[in-house]
Length: 233
Figure (cartoon, rainbow, N blue to C red):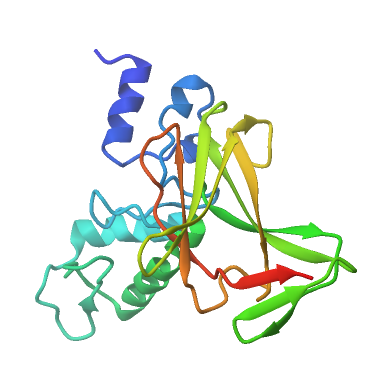
């Protein structure tokens, strides 16, 4: 007979359980947190066991229903392939495929471990000429920051910004996940010091990406961002 901790570990390994939905607390729950844990309000889609795209719970429920009853590969009139992942030939209504594409595009912005933020500072806002921006310290300005939660308190978090073209590390920082911070379980926050010139870390072109890992473990999924050349005058 499995103990309570054994049952939880088994369910986690199957990819069928999200700790945030169960409201489980304590060290036993915290050990289940993974780099692709979803932000609050989202769950893994589960179009296949390895499908950890974060979606609204209603989408997860519909995906389960489609997996249980949907036809595979040969669609009749009015149905299309879902295409939630390469090779997903489950026949669904067109709106379901549209939703799958939308969720795939938004997946990187729904992770608990990597949340892009703006850090406010005293100083003048930046002026931009193409991809080059500058600012002064005479008024408010913002820098690129990263935060995350659903980590075990005490976890040593490494944050890297890498260039998309070749994977070169452009910036790296470290922090310790603290309990009682901005988010459930352990949370962290780091300021890259990079002046935010385009108004958003997601304003194209997205020339870099952010990855995070805890205690030297597995890296999180990549979160594409803009990383412009800016300076203080």
